[in-house]
Length: 438
Image (cartoon, helix red, strand yellow):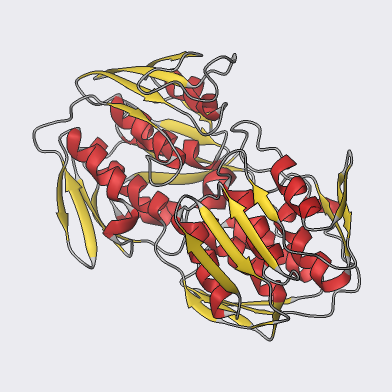
């Protein structure tokens, strides 16, 4: 594995950010495609892949299992090998969410699996219960221990599975397990995010029989084998939105290439209601706010609602809109963990355990702090802050870009885990950013 360098960024506000950004495929899509490639008889190629830390981590896990992973610029080629030891090493414990998705494929390949405990951003509980229940429904014996998850199955069978919540990860587990299971699987309450559909289309290219039905229902007819396939990933809608906000918050204008309008519908409308003006073509999208920004009330939701990964850049944008804005997070109960860092920079944000800015959500009678009221326009100042997760890291850079004075941002590895060459991209827009050892 590649060691994570301890470094920080020193950021100086440098006026409006302007320029062109070309986004690659989503980190949330590429890693799932890499896991799916394990199931094929023959090599698969994933094109337009981003250079992010999660790809390196996932590639290292696949190689530890005996597969070959080759990278040539934006292309990743995976050649499945004979898995003699179906165990993802414990050294990968807590690095990302991918190991749990490998259980189904490993059961098909060897009849047994062990994966370490999952990790990722500290944004709230993302329990493996839905994954485990689905695997058991398809005939696997699964034990969840202190160090990881062990599973066995001589054969996996189609089943009727109802998800209590449209979990993206659990939907992906069912997809990658049911495609080679014997018989039909009917999944109800499935997540239908673009990245999930993208994975289903890749599996279909590999020979899977998948039907996307109305009302969050997916029907999978198991097949005997899958072949290798090639695909080009669609543009990362999280990254595209983040850079559009970078232009708006600094009173500049960023033109984003490589992410189609249909992946940003709700985000575009939300920003337009705040006063942003858009130009949209088949090749690029750009946003500007020459007359300033208005406040808004937004609640996150599963697709096609306002996605949870869009809320952190939006929170910083709220601080530069004239008036009071409200953000209601309904997907993860601890997603506002980054607010203290922003408040240290002068963002006027108060958080609550009540449901504000939208209808009551599944956290309404809990102690979960999942709503925020933001006062703008806030006068931001440079500060020394630690970035706790991927999206919050980008948001801290946005705050630093409009702050008075220099900011030192620690935890850079988080942002590099999820964004393609972020330092180079920001520099290309005119931001003064320097990497320093800490």
